[in-house]
Image: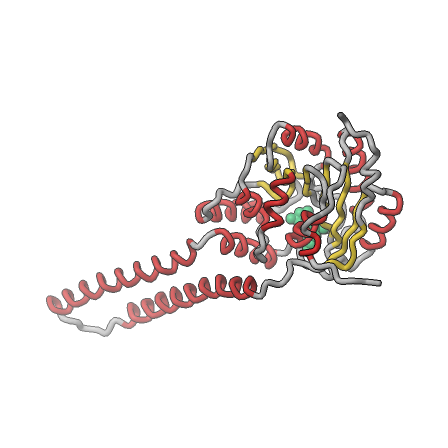
Length: 336
Ligand code: UDP
Ligand code: MG
Protein backbone atom coordinates (compact mmCIF):
# COMPACT_ATOMS: atom_id res chain seq x y z
CA UNK A 1 0.00 0.00 0.00
CA UNK A 2 1.37 3.38 -0.79
CA UNK A 3 0.60 6.28 1.49
CA UNK A 4 1.34 9.95 1.31
CA UNK A 5 4.23 10.94 3.54
CA UNK A 6 3.86 14.58 4.42
CA UNK A 7 6.96 16.35 5.72
CA UNK A 8 5.18 17.22 8.98
CA UNK A 9 5.06 13.55 9.86
CA UNK A 10 8.79 13.33 9.57
CA UNK A 11 9.66 16.07 11.98
CA UNK A 12 10.26 13.70 14.88
CA UNK A 13 12.76 11.33 13.32
CA UNK A 14 13.19 8.36 15.67
CA UNK A 15 16.40 8.41 17.60
CA UNK A 16 19.11 6.34 16.06
CA UNK A 17 22.27 5.04 17.52
CA UNK A 18 24.32 6.57 14.77
CA UNK A 19 26.62 9.47 15.40
CA UNK A 20 26.92 10.82 11.89
CA UNK A 21 24.39 11.22 9.08
CA UNK A 22 25.64 12.24 5.66
CA UNK A 23 22.95 13.76 3.44
CA UNK A 24 23.40 13.59 -0.32
CA UNK A 25 20.89 15.38 -2.56
CA UNK A 26 20.85 13.52 -5.86
CA UNK A 27 19.44 14.68 -9.16
CA UNK A 28 20.30 12.64 -12.27
CA UNK A 29 23.63 11.43 -10.94
CA UNK A 30 23.66 7.78 -12.00
CA UNK A 31 27.25 8.04 -13.23
CA UNK A 32 28.62 9.75 -10.14
CA UNK A 33 26.78 7.64 -7.55
CA UNK A 34 28.87 4.44 -7.44
CA UNK A 35 32.12 6.40 -7.28
CA UNK A 36 30.70 8.69 -4.62
CA UNK A 37 29.39 5.90 -2.43
CA UNK A 38 32.63 3.97 -2.64
CA UNK A 39 34.71 6.97 -1.56
CA UNK A 40 32.25 8.20 1.01
CA UNK A 41 31.78 4.83 2.68
CA UNK A 42 35.52 4.29 2.81
CA UNK A 43 36.05 7.60 4.58
CA UNK A 44 33.17 6.99 6.96
CA UNK A 45 34.42 3.56 7.92
CA UNK A 46 37.70 5.17 8.86
CA UNK A 47 36.08 7.71 11.19
CA UNK A 48 35.45 5.13 13.89
CA UNK A 49 31.95 6.42 14.58
CA UNK A 50 28.66 4.87 13.52
CA UNK A 51 27.16 6.46 10.46
CA UNK A 52 24.42 6.45 7.86
CA UNK A 53 24.16 8.02 4.41
CA UNK A 54 20.82 9.57 3.50
CA UNK A 55 20.40 9.74 -0.26
CA UNK A 56 17.58 12.05 -1.29
CA UNK A 57 16.62 11.48 -4.92
CA UNK A 58 15.23 14.78 -6.10
CA UNK A 59 12.91 13.29 -8.72
CA UNK A 60 15.69 12.06 -11.04
CA UNK A 61 14.66 10.99 -14.52
CA UNK A 62 17.69 8.84 -15.34
CA UNK A 63 18.87 5.57 -13.79
CA UNK A 64 19.40 7.13 -10.36
CA UNK A 65 16.49 5.34 -8.55
CA UNK A 66 17.73 1.95 -9.75
CA UNK A 67 21.31 2.84 -8.84
CA UNK A 68 20.21 3.85 -5.34
CA UNK A 69 18.14 0.70 -4.87
CA UNK A 70 21.11 -1.43 -5.92
CA UNK A 71 23.30 0.50 -3.57
CA UNK A 72 20.98 0.09 -0.63
CA UNK A 73 20.73 -3.65 -1.26
CA UNK A 74 24.40 -4.04 -0.39
CA UNK A 75 24.73 -1.15 2.06
CA UNK A 76 22.48 -1.33 5.13
CA UNK A 77 23.77 2.03 6.31
CA UNK A 78 22.24 3.77 3.29
CA UNK A 79 18.83 5.39 3.55
CA UNK A 80 17.06 6.21 0.32
CA UNK A 81 14.24 8.71 -0.06
CA UNK A 82 12.70 9.95 -3.27
CA UNK A 83 10.79 13.18 -3.67
CA UNK A 84 7.61 13.02 -5.72
CA UNK A 85 9.16 15.26 -8.41
CA UNK A 86 12.14 17.55 -8.87
CA UNK A 87 11.75 20.10 -6.09
CA UNK A 88 15.26 21.52 -6.32
CA UNK A 89 18.38 20.99 -4.26
CA UNK A 90 17.25 23.19 -1.37
CA UNK A 91 14.09 21.12 -0.87
CA UNK A 92 16.06 17.89 -1.23
CA UNK A 93 18.41 19.05 1.51
CA UNK A 94 15.48 20.04 3.71
CA UNK A 95 14.05 16.55 3.23
CA UNK A 96 17.41 15.05 4.14
CA UNK A 97 17.59 17.15 7.30
CA UNK A 98 14.20 15.83 8.37
CA UNK A 99 15.19 12.24 7.70
CA UNK A 100 18.71 12.28 9.09
CA UNK A 101 19.01 10.77 12.55
CA UNK A 102 22.62 11.28 13.47
CA UNK A 103 23.99 13.46 16.24
CA UNK A 104 25.95 15.34 13.61
CA UNK A 105 24.85 15.83 10.02
CA UNK A 106 27.02 16.50 6.98
CA UNK A 107 25.58 17.83 3.71
CA UNK A 108 27.56 16.88 0.63
CA UNK A 109 27.06 17.06 -3.16
CA UNK A 110 26.77 13.87 -5.16
CA UNK A 111 29.27 14.92 -7.80
CA UNK A 112 32.35 14.69 -5.54
CA UNK A 113 33.06 18.41 -5.83
CA UNK A 114 33.19 18.37 -2.06
CA UNK A 115 35.89 15.88 -1.04
CA UNK A 116 34.51 13.35 1.51
CA UNK A 117 38.05 13.03 2.88
CA UNK A 118 37.45 16.22 4.85
CA UNK A 119 34.70 14.68 6.95
CA UNK A 120 37.05 13.53 9.75
CA UNK A 121 38.28 17.13 10.10
CA UNK A 122 34.70 18.37 10.23
CA UNK A 123 33.90 15.80 12.92
CA UNK A 124 36.87 17.01 14.91
CA UNK A 125 35.63 20.60 14.73
CA UNK A 126 32.22 19.38 15.90
CA UNK A 127 33.78 17.51 18.81
CA UNK A 128 35.63 20.69 19.66
CA UNK A 129 32.27 22.33 20.18
CA UNK A 130 31.18 23.77 16.82
CA UNK A 131 27.49 23.54 15.90
CA UNK A 132 27.97 24.59 12.30
CA UNK A 133 31.19 23.75 10.45
CA UNK A 134 31.37 25.86 7.29
CA UNK A 135 33.60 24.70 4.49
CA UNK A 136 35.14 27.61 2.66
CA UNK A 137 36.34 27.08 -0.91
CA UNK A 138 39.85 28.29 -1.44
CA UNK A 139 39.75 27.51 -5.16
CA UNK A 140 36.97 26.52 -7.50
CA UNK A 141 38.53 24.28 -10.12
CA UNK A 142 36.58 23.33 -13.19
CA UNK A 143 34.33 26.37 -13.02
CA UNK A 144 34.33 29.14 -15.60
CA UNK A 145 35.67 32.57 -14.66
CA UNK A 146 32.21 33.96 -15.32
CA UNK A 147 30.69 31.70 -12.69
CA UNK A 148 33.43 32.56 -10.23
CA UNK A 149 33.04 36.28 -10.88
CA UNK A 150 29.26 36.20 -10.53
CA UNK A 151 29.47 34.13 -7.36
CA UNK A 152 31.95 36.58 -5.89
CA UNK A 153 29.80 39.57 -6.78
CA UNK A 154 26.73 37.86 -5.36
CA UNK A 155 28.29 37.30 -1.93
CA UNK A 156 29.45 40.88 -1.80
CA UNK A 157 26.02 42.24 -2.66
CA UNK A 158 24.09 39.99 -0.31
CA UNK A 159 26.41 40.71 2.61
CA UNK A 160 25.96 44.41 2.06
CA UNK A 161 22.22 43.94 2.38
CA UNK A 162 21.59 41.02 4.69
CA UNK A 163 21.07 41.35 8.42
CA UNK A 164 22.89 38.11 9.17
CA UNK A 165 26.40 37.82 7.71
CA UNK A 166 26.45 35.10 5.06
CA UNK A 167 29.96 33.66 4.80
CA UNK A 168 31.55 34.15 1.42
CA UNK A 169 32.61 31.17 -0.72
CA UNK A 170 30.90 28.75 1.62
CA UNK A 171 28.56 26.41 -0.22
CA UNK A 172 26.16 23.85 1.15
CA UNK A 173 28.98 21.47 2.13
CA UNK A 174 28.98 21.65 5.91
CA UNK A 175 28.43 19.88 9.20
CA UNK A 176 25.55 20.65 11.51
CA UNK A 177 25.03 19.57 15.08
CA UNK A 178 21.74 17.99 16.10
CA UNK A 179 20.42 21.20 17.62
CA UNK A 180 21.34 23.20 14.52
CA UNK A 181 19.40 20.64 12.46
CA UNK A 182 16.45 20.89 14.82
CA UNK A 183 16.52 24.67 14.46
CA UNK A 184 16.55 24.41 10.67
CA UNK A 185 13.66 21.94 10.76
CA UNK A 186 11.67 24.52 12.71
CA UNK A 187 11.91 27.08 9.93
CA UNK A 188 8.67 26.94 7.97
CA UNK A 189 9.52 29.22 5.09
CA UNK A 190 9.45 28.25 1.47
CA UNK A 191 12.26 30.50 0.54
CA UNK A 192 14.92 27.90 1.27
CA UNK A 193 18.01 29.95 0.72
CA UNK A 194 19.94 27.46 2.80
CA UNK A 195 23.24 29.34 2.97
CA UNK A 196 21.32 32.14 4.64
CA UNK A 197 19.33 29.83 6.90
CA UNK A 198 22.49 28.08 8.11
CA UNK A 199 23.91 31.47 9.07
CA UNK A 200 20.65 32.63 10.59
CA UNK A 201 20.63 29.67 12.98
CA UNK A 202 23.73 31.01 14.66
CA UNK A 203 25.31 28.93 17.48
CA UNK A 204 29.01 28.27 17.38
CA UNK A 205 30.32 28.41 13.83
CA UNK A 206 33.68 27.10 12.66
CA UNK A 207 35.27 27.37 9.24
CA UNK A 208 37.59 24.97 7.43
CA UNK A 209 39.18 25.87 4.09
CA UNK A 210 39.36 23.43 1.19
CA UNK A 211 39.91 23.22 -2.56
CA UNK A 212 36.78 22.59 -4.55
CA UNK A 213 37.19 19.79 -7.09
CA UNK A 214 35.83 19.56 -10.63
CA UNK A 215 32.74 17.37 -11.10
CA UNK A 216 33.52 13.62 -11.09
CA UNK A 217 30.94 12.83 -13.79
CA UNK A 218 27.81 14.19 -15.36
CA UNK A 219 27.15 17.89 -15.78
CA UNK A 220 26.02 20.76 -13.59
CA UNK A 221 22.29 21.28 -13.12
CA UNK A 222 22.63 24.98 -12.55
CA UNK A 223 21.96 27.27 -15.44
CA UNK A 224 22.32 31.00 -15.23
CA UNK A 225 18.56 31.41 -15.10
CA UNK A 226 18.46 29.16 -12.04
CA UNK A 227 21.39 30.99 -10.48
CA UNK A 228 19.67 34.33 -11.04
CA UNK A 229 16.55 33.06 -9.27
CA UNK A 230 18.73 31.66 -6.54
CA UNK A 231 20.41 35.03 -6.04
CA UNK A 232 17.01 36.73 -5.87
CA UNK A 233 15.82 34.18 -3.32
CA UNK A 234 18.86 34.93 -1.24
CA UNK A 235 18.46 38.65 -1.34
CA UNK A 236 14.70 38.84 -0.89
CA UNK A 237 14.79 36.18 1.81
CA UNK A 238 17.37 37.94 3.92
CA UNK A 239 17.02 41.62 3.26
CA UNK A 240 14.47 44.34 2.69
CA UNK A 241 17.16 46.73 1.49
CA UNK A 242 15.93 46.60 -2.15
CA UNK A 243 12.54 47.89 -0.97
CA UNK A 244 14.29 50.76 0.72
CA UNK A 245 16.42 51.30 -2.38
CA UNK A 246 13.26 51.98 -4.36
CA UNK A 247 12.25 54.63 -1.82
CA UNK A 248 15.69 56.19 -1.93
CA UNK A 249 15.81 56.22 -5.71
CA UNK A 250 12.40 57.90 -5.75
CA UNK A 251 13.45 60.44 -3.17
CA UNK A 252 16.71 61.25 -4.92
CA UNK A 253 15.12 61.67 -8.34
CA UNK A 254 12.42 63.89 -6.82
CA UNK A 255 15.13 66.02 -5.21
CA UNK A 256 17.08 66.18 -8.47
CA UNK A 257 13.93 67.17 -10.34
CA UNK A 258 13.27 69.90 -7.80
CA UNK A 259 16.82 71.21 -8.13
CA UNK A 260 16.59 71.11 -11.89
CA UNK A 261 13.26 72.98 -11.80
CA UNK A 262 14.89 75.77 -9.80
CA UNK A 263 17.78 76.02 -12.25
CA UNK A 264 15.33 75.97 -15.14
CA UNK A 265 13.16 78.77 -13.73
CA UNK A 266 16.25 80.85 -12.98
CA UNK A 267 17.63 80.29 -16.48
CA UNK A 268 14.35 81.16 -18.20
CA UNK A 269 13.95 84.31 -16.14
CA UNK A 270 17.49 85.55 -16.75
CA UNK A 271 18.30 84.32 -20.28
CA UNK A 272 14.88 83.47 -21.69
CA UNK A 273 14.19 80.09 -23.33
CA UNK A 274 15.05 80.03 -27.05
CA UNK A 275 14.35 76.29 -27.81
CA UNK A 276 12.14 73.66 -26.26
CA UNK A 277 14.24 71.17 -24.25
CA UNK A 278 13.26 68.00 -26.03
CA UNK A 279 16.34 65.90 -25.11
CA UNK A 280 16.05 66.79 -21.44
CA UNK A 281 12.41 65.91 -21.52
CA UNK A 282 12.82 62.51 -23.08
CA UNK A 283 15.76 61.62 -20.83
CA UNK A 284 13.80 62.59 -17.74
CA UNK A 285 10.75 60.63 -18.82
CA UNK A 286 12.80 57.54 -19.60
CA UNK A 287 14.73 57.79 -16.36
CA UNK A 288 11.66 58.20 -14.20
CA UNK A 289 9.71 55.55 -16.12
CA UNK A 290 12.60 53.15 -15.72
CA UNK A 291 12.93 53.83 -12.01
CA UNK A 292 9.21 53.35 -11.50
CA UNK A 293 9.13 50.08 -13.40
CA UNK A 294 12.15 48.84 -11.49
CA UNK A 295 10.57 49.74 -8.17
CA UNK A 296 7.36 47.97 -9.11
CA UNK A 297 9.45 45.00 -10.15
CA UNK A 298 11.16 44.92 -6.75
CA UNK A 299 7.79 45.12 -5.03
CA UNK A 300 6.64 42.29 -7.26
CA UNK A 301 9.56 40.05 -6.25
CA UNK A 302 8.62 40.40 -2.59
CA UNK A 303 4.90 40.19 -3.18
CA UNK A 304 5.31 37.05 -5.26
CA UNK A 305 7.25 35.38 -2.50
CA UNK A 306 4.73 36.48 0.08
CA UNK A 307 2.04 34.93 -2.08
CA UNK A 308 3.88 31.62 -2.21
CA UNK A 309 4.53 31.62 1.54
CA UNK A 310 0.87 32.28 2.37
CA UNK A 311 -0.15 29.11 0.59
CA UNK A 312 1.77 27.13 3.22
CA UNK A 313 2.35 24.21 0.94
CA UNK A 314 4.72 21.56 2.21
CA UNK A 315 8.31 22.05 1.08
CA UNK A 316 8.38 18.68 -0.64
CA UNK A 317 6.47 15.44 -0.90
CA UNK A 318 8.06 12.06 -0.51
CA UNK A 319 7.48 9.31 -3.00
CA UNK A 320 9.08 6.74 -0.74
CA UNK A 321 11.55 6.49 2.10
CA UNK A 322 13.59 3.42 2.96
CA UNK A 323 15.45 4.19 6.19
CA UNK A 324 18.90 2.88 6.91
CA UNK A 325 18.85 -0.05 9.24
CA UNK A 326 19.54 1.48 12.63
CA UNK A 327 20.76 -1.74 14.22
CA UNK A 328 23.65 -1.76 11.76
CA UNK A 329 24.53 1.88 11.42
CA UNK A 330 27.58 1.43 9.27
CA UNK A 331 29.76 -1.32 10.59
CA UNK A 332 29.22 -1.14 14.32
CA UNK A 333 32.65 -0.03 15.36
CA UNK A 334 31.56 2.68 17.72
CA UNK A 335 34.50 4.39 19.31
CA UNK A 336 34.04 4.88 23.01
N1 UDP B 1 20.73 18.71 -7.17
C1 UDP B 1 19.47 18.37 -6.69
N2 UDP B 1 18.36 18.90 -7.27
C2 UDP B 1 18.45 19.77 -8.33
C3 UDP B 1 19.74 20.13 -8.80
C4 UDP B 1 20.86 19.59 -8.19
O1 UDP B 1 19.34 17.59 -5.74
O2 UDP B 1 17.41 20.21 -8.82
C5 UDP B 1 21.94 18.12 -6.53
C6 UDP B 1 22.93 17.47 -7.49
O3 UDP B 1 22.61 16.12 -7.74
C7 UDP B 1 24.23 17.60 -6.73
C8 UDP B 1 24.06 18.91 -5.98
O4 UDP B 1 22.65 19.16 -5.93
O5 UDP B 1 24.39 16.57 -5.77
C9 UDP B 1 24.80 20.05 -6.63
O6 UDP B 1 24.37 20.20 -7.97
P1 UDP B 1 25.35 20.61 -9.13
O7 UDP B 1 26.63 19.86 -9.03
O8 UDP B 1 24.60 20.46 -10.41
O9 UDP B 1 25.59 22.15 -8.80
P2 UDP B 1 26.99 22.94 -8.81
O10 UDP B 1 27.97 22.10 -8.06
O11 UDP B 1 27.32 23.11 -10.23
O12 UDP B 1 26.67 24.20 -8.09
MG1 MG C 1 28.47 20.30 -8.51
